[in-house]
Length: 373
Image 1 (cartoon, helix red, strand yellow):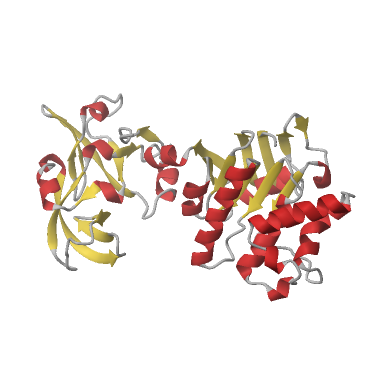
Image 2 (tube, one colour):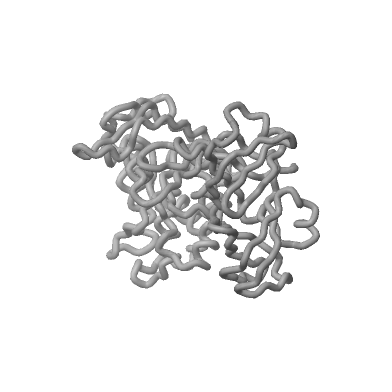
């Protein structure tokens, strides 16, 4: 096991900067997730760590070694690809053993490692089958097993679950978490799925346009996003954003938009620069847009009138898409509360849970209060 450190790493493809001045430190034994939309540079970053792409600038360290000039085979990393990359003419045992044989590992040691890993991944009964005789989930587990038997310092995983169906993704995700807990090997995992990122990572690095936007634990990212991109990308449904203005009067500070009128708490009212008339973006998560009558009544200072436009019943909860003036918000509600499309209702925003963002820089002005432990 080893830490991985990127120092001012940049990658250019001609005039295009795919990765821009990335500083990132992955601690020994950590499960770090790189997440972001397609084209944000996360796979390019992973390939540079593996040695499959050359960094245009910057340094890549694995453990105490600067590895920029080292070929992939000498970096002691194992990579799992999205497309499995199994040898079709070899059975499961041979696919898993191939890398060890290339390294001249003794035959008895190869056999022990392959059978131990196959048992842990539920592949013990499939060792004599060829890839064409396996399901997609089984093939992905073989690809994982081939990486694990090498016992590398670092695992690099490039969207390894994206080809699986929804149920199998959840199952394999759980297996990967258990595997990391047991092995404790430093792992860098690339995905575009923020649910995977939130459930798997010890920490998450959010990338956009080749730059790292924020590195934090899942809870910190959700509760304290650094900017509007992180706030909108992390969380499902995404955070509501409403553009409006700050108003100051003798009673305090309010945020007012076409449909909202929210009395801001003292901790936000005291922020420097929150002057009267300043344009601002208010962010609020769907669970902090309240529709239960008793809770709305208790927050009269941030209540507003809305109309139900769309209802999404999901069993354990429902999402209401609301229109308030020109503003559109999504509210997460209990499934036992019954609403109809077109029905007017009184809703409220929890003022202690709102975020404020500068509309020009899109940076967060201040996070909401921390959730209770």
